[in-house]
Image 1 (cartoon, one colour):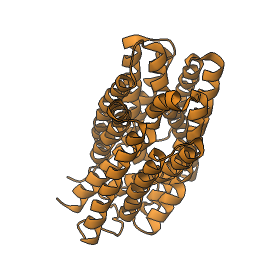
Image 2 (cartoon, one colour):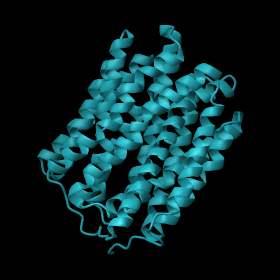
Image 3 (cartoon, helix red, strand yellow):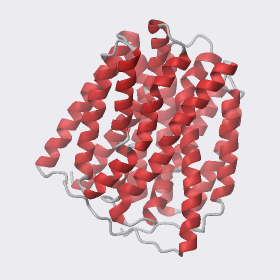
Image 4 (spheres, helix red, strand yellow):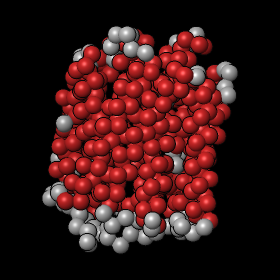
Length: 392
């Protein structure tokens, strides 16, 4: 197995773990509501700082990985997620859980600016590599819900935090061994096939549109990921915590496969067309989520997640094309400080809307409107018929 393959392997595992740790609290909270006798609003607010730190931590993590080592930053991520998750599991009151969740968010912030740049600069077929990597992101989101539900069913919420934490530390140790034995490079690898030039005016327009698009897509992703367990709990009768976790696991697991499809398409077709279609297709999905119940609700949630996943490789390649290689970690950090920095807004909206209405209809009106606005915005990206051509 060569360096590139090992990089994709550990980056994919890291992607799955990051999303698993960032998602499983939304299922664990359903058990905590009963055991700790706190309201959903109180418990979901404990994740506010952790959600914010996933975004805020991305920029310094990306900058440090550019200056130092992306592979070793991944080791730090695995250890950080593991220890903070264990701390959450050992918590017996709200403040300790709040502290553990906050540290967990900070540890999760390392992945995207570091792991994505790690893959982009070590792979020739970047769309395909990002697609494979993206599948594991979907698996992570889905497995977070499924594993949490499974461990709660057979053990309790504490084990749902502690056991994944132990596994993460173990993976970090293995990656560390590969690095010190030089099977994986400690030094950052430079990409040779990302070149593009634009006028200053075009770059300003691209930056403005991409900033708005990444913020809106990040916000809608956070809203859906955070609220869907409770939406299913409200609108689908007689579902256990385990069943909710299993359904969400299936939704995001299937949706993750679309990242590979989107990545392969990004290597072959117009990046702009892929991006526009993937965003526009989410508009009717979110509108339907506002109203549907039962099986139709599950289907439209699946479709929304699939379209969202399909455009991620395209978005990451677009960013890499317009940024010097030595700043890839920094630009991905900037992307994810915007995307994940929207999470506290999502938590606030979810908490307030549920507190006032005991439902989420208005929440999905907001996501529908955002997707309409983003669709029109990305139509003005000055990159018509742009696609990647890599050497065989």
